[in-house]
Image (cartoon, rainbow, N blue to C red; front, side):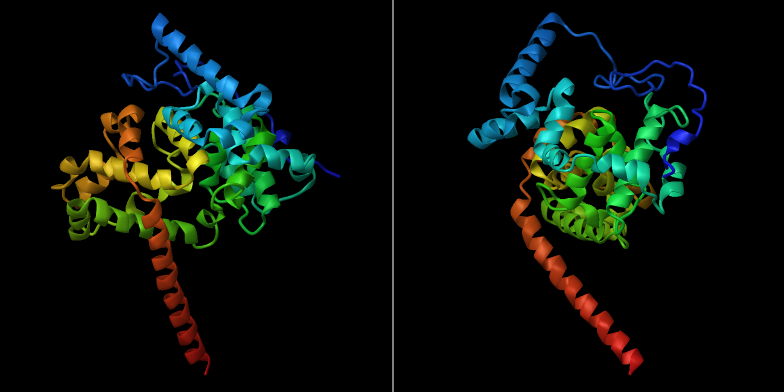
Length: 360
């Protein structure tokens, strides 16, 4: 049977080398961001990081063999360490362990290869069209039809075949690309499955289904939380006719991987994979809280710009994340979820009533 994959296209020219940050992104000129730069470390910092890595290695065991036992025995230690940030050299493995994707991989040998090589997808052209827009400044994805773009195509194509109801939606590319920077194609595919199908936390597939039902729910919940936690800003947003769909949709669809600094996105993903989507609400609220005084008097146009371009100091994970962790949302999210379902149920019943009326 004919193989269907992007490999059939000849790779384009390799882009000329450019200065890269420590994550592999091309460095913007005049960027003095402390976390983005590949800065030298002092001996003390290096030793502290080495100690941290040793603690993590002991905690997870060889290849993750001790992880489940440790996580069950000392969940508070695990949570605290994850919130401080997973060491970058262990991030890929730990993400697979905390997301449940490693188990999915082991239970489904050969499935990924079958999906990539022998199946066809209705989304193939859409995926090819979008690939060059996904992390275009990262060295792994820069070359047209190069290894990074081929891997990204394969993962997205495989998922679109695996779950034909969801298929492929553009925002999924950022999730898959982020994962591919820390693991193999097959590992990234099963982590995507774990997220969208809900191996550990609530399924994310509603973010990408027709009509984006889960995005609508999350935006409703976030809007209410803004009004409750930041009432003055919430009132100002109402007066200026600002709603979360104008600025927060991408936060949920890509879990902050689309336009946020990479070092911050990674720290959010560490917590997201362990604690679930509530961290997206917490970080969103923390950002608004941090910028509250600057935004409270801005008119509509400037407010929209500010909500899409947060200042660099607001993006420092060591400032923003402790603020986010201090915001409690779990119980309220449950209550708002029930409110939304009740409200939505009434709307569906009303639509059905009007439809029946038309037919009678």
